[in-house]
Length: 157
Image 1 (cartoon, rainbow, N blue to C red):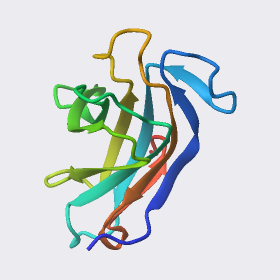
Image 2 (cartoon, one colour):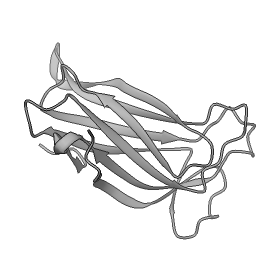
Image 3 (cartoon, rainbow, N blue to C red):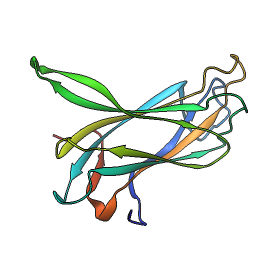
Image 4 (cartoon, rainbow, N blue to C red):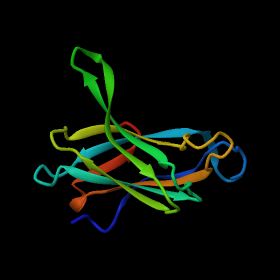
């Protein structure tokens, strides 16, 4: 069972969309933003899974369109060159409807005890230009069984 308490990783107001300035209290990022985080495994016997939770304001999607893309990337050292790292897609999701909370489950089976992730949230660009949905990303949280994985904002050495 997931802990009922989600661990806050980041909180703020990032405006995504194609109309800068409509949210005067939010930082405008344009069509996408990517948040870095470090996951640490705290219990070697716990499940190899966690759930990332995104909270938004004013997100609405048009019927017939796929919704706003979310991609979770895992950054790993290149086995051929330890001074270079590779980015691998760990999970994808779509933010749809007019919800304010979205959960993205992550299967971390076979992964290490310290993981570097990028959570990229974008605007649905399959909609005609000029009709893109403008919304605010407010919060990123981590929700794991008994806090088997804890998260820190940014990449921690």
